[in-house]
Length: 175
View 1 (cartoon, rainbow, N blue to C red):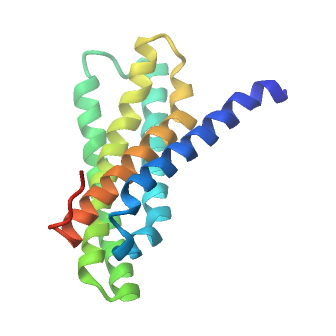
View 2 (tube, helix red, strand yellow):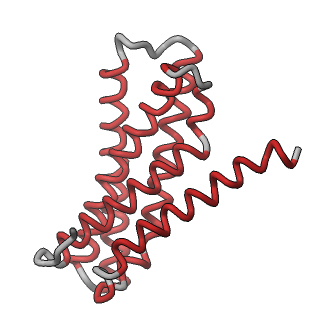
């Protein structure tokens, strides 16, 4: 049993290291904006939740033959729209919390806009990954676990810091 579970642990550690690397890329640019780090757990939580929910829906639809090549674009667009709606609701919540806690409307707005983008992209990725797995004959349920978290977390961090830094400090070089 240990050898069956060990690869998943290694994948989890690898995803954590990948996220740490992405944080390292941005850390030099955010030293003056330390507050962004405080919201990373919210960003990763939203990315993981929205991504895995979308992946589970796609996996179920694939298993039940409700999702096919013919309707994948329409269904995926609908899932991305749900991500935008969820992100919009989370925007309001996070903006108010950040505003009350940090007393900074710019940080709250940056967090909110980032969350909208992250929720939409995570929904899109979460819905497409099981389809891609199916095309490559990998069971689609594998996509709804660790792999979707790995991908959504990395994309979420990049989106969060890029969007937030652009809104908070527009003159800052991101390259």
